[in-house]
Image (tube, rainbow over all chains, first blue to last red; front, side, top):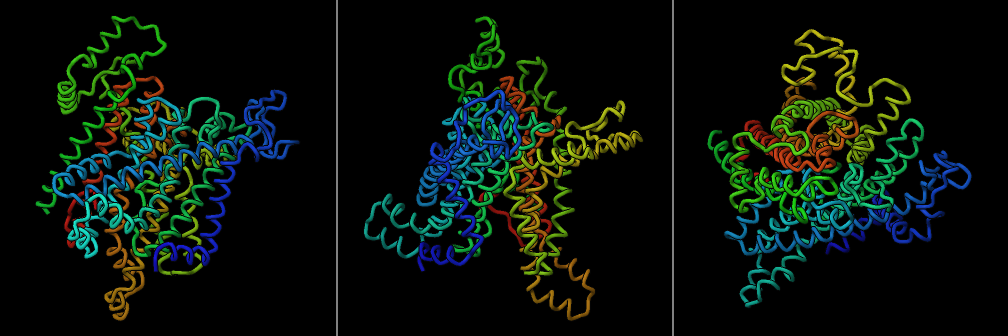
Length: 288
Length: 340
């Protein structure tokens, strides 16, 4: 059975995975259509209505210290998580896949060199590396994505390189080579499609890791600069009002938790569907 | 055993060279001049900036800068803090015990909670306990630690004041002399039981927060290891010989342990990363908070030094894990180090 069919069969049969998938779709829809969904302007301040508790008149999730609507800020905040999550994972995957394919297929000193680089990279707790990179590059959306790509590509490179090493000795690759197919087309047309399943699993789980990392950076004051609401920054702001307004720190955390939970459920489901054996397709660090 | 250690040591040296290059490069990927970035918007004269450039060695050719950085680091000289004027090594040294203590405490939490959960889940596979355990583990893995920490503070420090919300020691403990720097060792050494009690209360919430994710991982990995072992013939043989259940379980754990140890070893590194956030949440005076403070003060020598030290700790832990693993399971031949 090919992997798209396995997926189709699997998702239909597991209510838990289905729930995770629905949650993820909701997250994406909310992020994309935020301006139409949000009841209020997330920047609109109303100093007479500061720190209103949830279920207040007109504010289902209450207001923050500047009287801004928490629900609308949460809805807009999902955009940062969404953009960072998908952009960072996509870019890291592309870079990692190319390096992994070349390293595994060409072999020799190229492979040794790349793998030593990977080893050195893995010597850093990745949150630390991301923090250090944002610290020197400066805050902002692009720099955060750059930091996450610099820390994230290694995972895919290692994975794809391992797969390539075993695939390159298989008959279909050998025969393609015998027919004089050029190496680039062997790598991308013959080897890559056969490593897609584990890549898909890792990439899905990585969306969760990346979202939490972005939230951690924002929480530490190294996030997206400016007034754009982000879940991590909302949490950090809410910390100062813990004794007076519990909802300010609680709600954005709950949003992050729900999205990451959904990603992990779907990722685990994908792994069970595509490769029930492999327990290793998980980043060493899940929640920083 | 010895050849294993020697080969692994060789790999470690290569990794350390890579680490030094990455850490060294940090200050050079700054957009613009590092000194100008550090003092952006501050009233520091051109001459002073030039002096800082010389102090940091930025006026020299880049290759020479790298070698003097490595030479300094090997002698324990990581430069001088721009803001405090004291040696970076000294500042970092004073924060390491707090971070190590917190990390070890998180590990203890993980073992105390994770091991029994794994045993119960594996012995009663498919039961309500097993499934409950899996769900809790999934929650533990998905919960961002800074949020968990804040929620614990909200519930256990603010709503009911059982635990202090921040710091490492309360005022009631009086003066505690530093001997090892590890508070939970220094206090009993001096017979200061108030300080020990206060220290334990202070470390409880941060350790629980930091330990949550790794607890979940440990229980999952150990559970699947135990299930694997449970099916083996020799376990049936032990049962058939009429061994008591606890002794059979002991045999199972002994055989499921190596896999769990590897995973835990790798995760200790992630604990070091996670400690950064947890230390900020709980105002814990460790290496992680030092990095974050230094970033806010744009004190690059401290940032660089702290990143290097954390990576060194991480590499050392990985090295030890591999050795322990080889010792626990003689069948394993080490190859390739971190890469599979």
